[in-house]
Length: 448
Ligand code: PMP
Image (cartoon, rainbow, N blue to C red; front, side, top):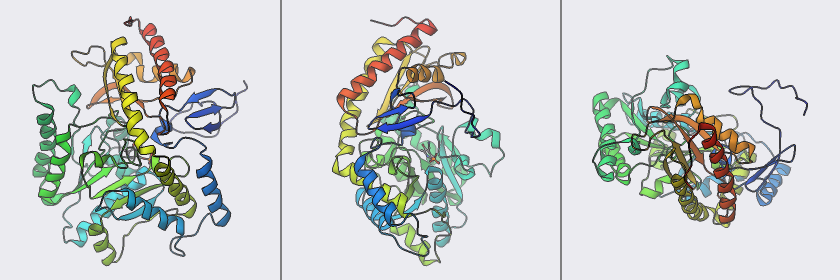
């Protein structure tokens, strides 16, 4: 194959094959090779690829108008998408602001929180507490909240450092606490931090309800979620859920917050919200927060492409598809099937130390020793090696090398929400084949 020169760069060189087309859970490169999109790209393609109903709706909007600036016109796609979003989110979240991606959503959430505090005469509140590890985006503000040192440190000093509390990585804890007590222990870290910083300086706490890129589908004990909400209420700290990865049905509910009956003050959405059919994101907040800001002169924020009719028509078609095809219910059901399959891998591969997740946001993590949960030798580069072995065999996985503040290889398995049981079986055959090849390479015998 002749190399096509590329003037384009991302994080690195090393170009992948050219993408030709997508079809459901599959992607095809230009040589005709088929891949199962086992991570929905970066947990984006929730309704699968090239959905004809969605494409027809986008095309219909394209034929009418692709852009109308929001200061010049209201548009039906943006109004209808806002209505549908409010309908699908829990009560108390009834105002929507559109953006074009996840980092933009996080930035917008922080600015809305800040402007709200100012209207309430609480201008002293500016600190946003986040968790470590965590991922909230790559723009400066969102990066400052991101609890992942390798991404932050090259840019330091960025902005005045924002306080961080430990993510509830309870699978690494070696104490004798019950799960409930562990959840409460991690929530109290937030309370301690608010007191340490001075409650009247703390604007908000931001968290991924189920961890994503940085922690690999980390789910906290149930007790954590309610206690965090209580602590935020106690000190008048706004609770921001970054549901950029978990939102739009990925975990088996429209918002992951619904699993614990939590109503955050602001929710950030993107990824599955446009599901790869358009660059799209949103923040959803209560009128309680938004109306005072509008009354005080308006939200001093907005991106040129915000609420454009083309992206919003795609978002609306995606949410309609989630509803019409019962895809959120399917994510819950297939998530259980996938989780059982992944747990079964632990019998065969001694280097799988943990399997976790919610709905179709699942992960497994490698260790050298399950009793200590020590990570594999970093020299093995396991996170990239297994991804390559799977890719060669036609399965796309998403991996990172970070955990609990140190490092460890974890792999996200997060196929489109349309996946069937047979397709999960098909995916697991390839995954086991890749894991066998990896075991052979590192010289670890597998259990038959
Ligand atoms: N928040 C979370 C939880 C994410 O997973 C991501 C993307 N991985 C972002 C924010 C940033 O989104 P984007 O890359 O679309 O800016």
